[in-house]
Image (cartoon, rainbow, N blue to C red; front, side, top):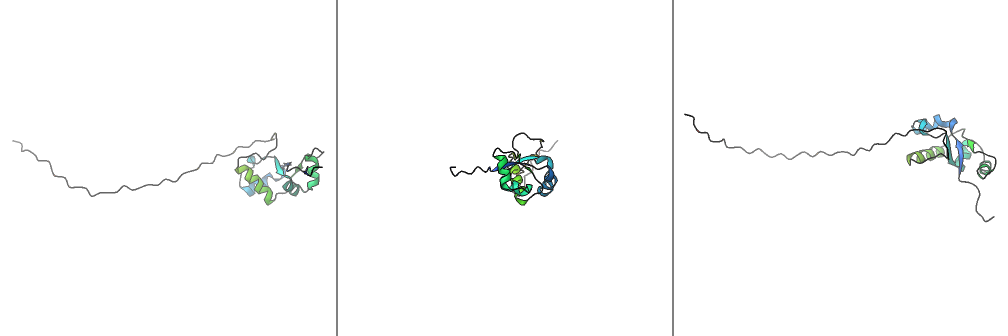
Length: 132
């Protein structure tokens, strides 16, 4: 070996069991959370309840197909939130569902300036010519 680790950094995680929890905790529609996502291996091992070794065998070409999340963690919530905020995909390959995202509208505050008022100048009445 040349000293390079063959442990992958991302693995496939099925989030279907925890979509409701993620949706509530992140305050977003669960349709916006992918069912299958590419998650860092250390977070995946934690939320799936399996060891990194088991996940790395599958991700390295072995027989494992990733894992199914059975719980959520602060790290998983943060990772999903960051990916969604960056409009990035947390999915790996074909998605089994598609969600719609609500566009964000930024409103720039408007400032109103009050025009300066000047005292009205008295006007001289027009001279009138007497009618005969």
